[in-house]
Length: 456
Image (cartoon, rainbow, N blue to C red; front, side, top):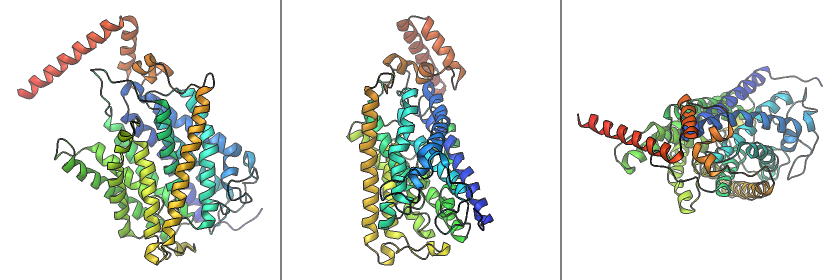
């Protein structure tokens, strides 16, 4: 099929797809740094394996279910099964780009959502069931919600709900599903005297944040599918929201956290990610000053929203639910307030605007979409996991001994740090009580030396 192609927009969307891909190892590094060192490799590996599994699912049925233009209000059909009919066809919307460009760009979103969700397996989840879960979750959770939100026939899109770049399909679905996964897996084993439930590598968290922030420009700005001044505006509000989020989190830590009056790099990374999540649904609809509200509100709500897991006694080790589900929900609602129709009009996209434009019903539409995304993700993920956990070979959680030794030892033949392998060998060859006593003695000596050095 011959068509006139907008070469500039085609190039920008392809560049944006590459930028979004950078976020995937960024998420792996971010999660890997937050977990214990003896399970850090598993999250790096899963970020790449998720890419492979989701890409296959997208090729097979995922894209067709999410974006076939002849589907129902609820889900797409198989018009593009095994990726047929995606070459040399123009995509929907105002962008005049080949269908296959839109195909690869949206694939990156599907991978990102799955990579976020599987962080819930940290330190206690078996790897093979996680791989199976990624395929099933992409099919029955992500594809459905993406279709509702972005397909021309999706019920939420027809209703008038706004989500520029994935506040609901990516963040609310992934964050909610991570909460369910954590609930089904149960709590981690209590830490020993020589371990702590704290991030083991802040450097990895920093690099993961930097890669994610960098990729987020393509994530949000590329979603307009057109290179224009609006694309530049989206980059501006994305960056400003991230900055506001990081600053807000640090101020909260500085004045509220014990000990007071201390800054942390980890806090800035968490806050900036919260700001990025929150601005995602509204990035193509809000003005520059408003992005500060998104960053501050998102960071504050995520900061205090972490208490939910404590209230319900759910072990969400990486705070995925707070970061993505709560951040995405807040951003979706704020979009209903601050969306203005003059901004998407730059790209010839017509909306009725939000509360600022006198359309108070937009908040209702946003609430319906966000709530439905939350409920669907929670229920379907719970069903998937409960069924899988009953199937021989797909038991979700590793053994107690495997968890104590670490997922890297239990599930892999590699380690992020070579001394972990030495520790493993020592653990295997030396009787366990003697091994633990020796480690505790070493830890005590190190602690005493540090105390003496501090006094000196």
